[in-house]
Image 1 (spheres, one colour):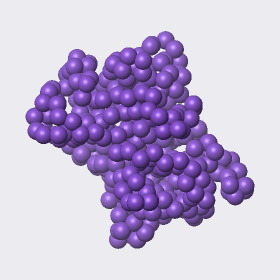
Image 2: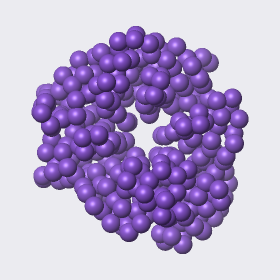
Image 3: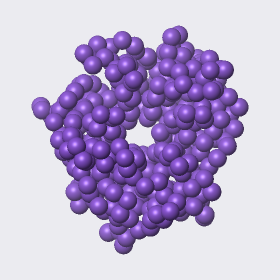
Image 4: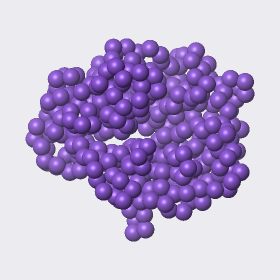
Length: 343
C-alpha cells in the first residue's frame, strides 16, 4: 500500500488550474477530479484503456475487453454515461476523433508475412479512418511499409517479436508552421509510434508512404508521441532498458531535442510502460507516469519544477491496480460549463 495517496503537493500560483481525467487501471469507472483530488464527476465505463473528452463533453474511450453487451472497440458515451456511438473492432492503444467527425483507429490484424516475422501469424498494426456511419474510408497496413523503415531509420527485418511494432499512437497532424513549409508534416498526415522499433514516424495520408521517421538509438520503448501546435513533437520516452524515463520535445525537421524533463536523480522518474504527457496552455507539461509503482500524475514547469503531484488512490476500485494508461488535464472553464449544465 502506498504511504501517500491523492494530491501530495499543489503550487496554486504556478500550476495550470483545472480538472484531471483519471481512469484507474482497467476499472469500470473514470473519474474527473479537481486540483485538490476531489471527485467531481464519474462515468460508468467498461474496461477503459485510453480515453479523453470531446468538445461536446462526451467521453470517448477504447476497451480491450469483450462481452455480449460491450464488444471490444471504440465507445463514446455522454455526460451521464449513455452510449452515443460504438464501433466494434480489434482496437488497441489509441484513436483520434477528427474535425470532420470521422475517427482514426489503431487496431490489430493477424497476418502471415515472413518478411516481417518468421513465425506464424504475427500481430500487425493497422490504422483506419471510419465515418460516424461506420464506413471505412482509409486503411493503412504497417507490414506493407517495411522498406520505408529500412531506408529511413535502418530497422532490420525480419523482427524477433510476434507483436513486431506494438504501435501505441495515432494522430492526424494539425496545421502548423512546420507543415506549411515542409509537406512531410502537412496537416492531415498521420503520426504513429512503433514502440518495439523505438520509432515514431509520419504517413503521407494521400500516398500512404512513410515520409519521415526518427528514434532508433535515441528512444527506448516510447509512448504517446504527438505534434504540438508549433510543429514540435512531445514524447514519453519510457526507458525500460535505460532504467529511467524522460519526457522530450523534439524538432522533427532537424531531429533535435529542444526540451526534456528528467528527474534528479533520473531513476526517481521511471515508468517502464504505459504513460503519456500533455503540454498545457500555461507552458507547463502534465505527465502521466502511469506505469510507475504508484500511478503518479504530476505537472512540471519548463524549468522542471514540480507544481502538482498526485498518486493514484483508486486501486481498491480497480482490482488492486494503480496503473493509469493515459490521463489529461482540462481547463476549468470547459469543465465548469459542463458541470453547471449537468449535460
